[in-house]
Length: 361
Image 1: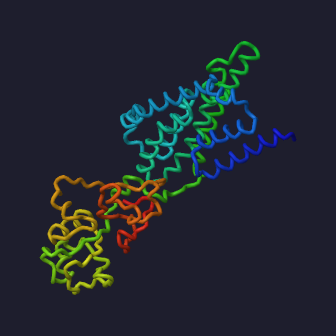
Image 2: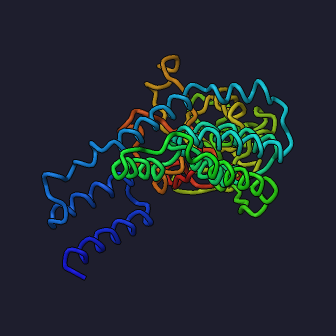
Image 3: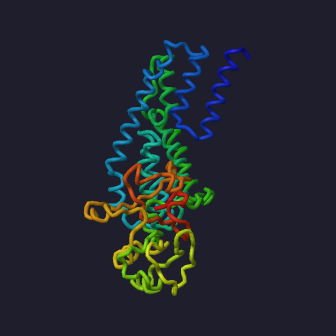
């Protein structure tokens, strides 16, 4: 191997390793690889960006724009709801999704066809009580098969057509690929419909936005104020205002953590770790004249000007792994953290010491 070949394979190997590592965006990795190739002399500097003027890039980019427009219009989703509102058979749902994705991917980019139909697939998954993976992988295969049917279905078809035009002066027509491509697509759809159970069934480990927001239990901190009618009374009296919907997980008195026994007398400036539905927590805080963690006297006077928002920490959020005290929400964003919900798990830490996870509300 020549020196240039070793450099080329080395850059490609590093680029593939970076793709597999998934720590950086693919476009950033590709641009860095191009810069490296120019730096070592594999690609002449004057030709570094000549690829962006290639017809193939324009065609693929245009297809992505069209795909995004169709996906955002909601036409396909509306048609599914109108004509197949009660489709509950798993085989019927699979057939509809695969045929639609196959036909769409014959004329638009595969990723665009998937983007259009993925919301429908998630609706079908909820309707049939199955993991979305049951539909998603067969849809990916059908998108690949559908792209075989037309000249513009896949980038390789476009490239081959262009090469043929350069060699013979005549390109493939739009449907020259259809006889072979349609046969393969039909065979693939039949196989996927009857053997979809071969696809790995992966349950979602991260709750969806809707599932997270429907979580019924939140954890919050509230302090007994001087004006609270429950100062000097037992914890049991305070919790009675929530009609049993709220539980106390701890009482913090100075640097001491007390067990939340019902007969514990509450003192001024005691901090209670409370857990329950948001409505019940709001009721106990208002009736008990408690002060939520992080709120100030100025906030309480401006209560009418303050909005309350529920937000879900997404899978790739930079907040994951950080404690709420490290974020300095009040000083940085002017935001008070009132409560946290972690689906299916009881929170016993103080809000300031809580390490955030994906799916937290």
